[in-house]
Image 1 (cartoon, helix red, strand yellow):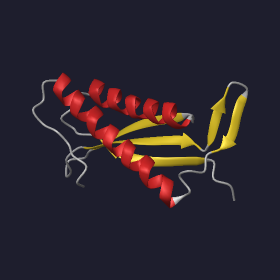
Image 2 (cartoon, rainbow, N blue to C red):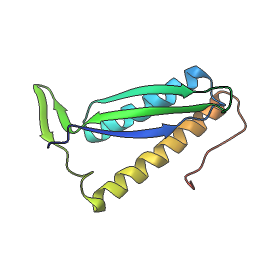
Image 3 (cartoon, rainbow, N blue to C red):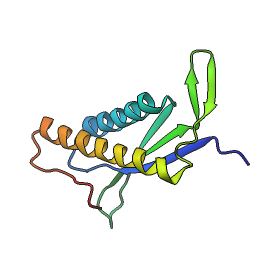
Image 4 (tube, rainbow, N blue to C red):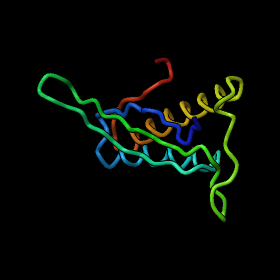
Length: 117
């Protein structure tokens, strides 16, 4: 069995406007795409019913092959390696924190997120 797709879920603060939620989701997808050269796709969900508060989150999916001018190239392997994957995930979490906090500031929201959870 071959792995062709990687995915992660990102919690999006419900304090952000819908435009802000979309903006930060696009920003992190672009950051990952630029950093490792893969195509990314985002899908934002707002699961909310009468018994729960908003559970806004983004599904970020990425292919496991590098996108090249003439098609798909070599398979990415650094996320398969625990030594290198930790560095990338830590970087992406830090970038996410900075992007969300910048969006809070842009929207005039006096709040922030951290990487403690």
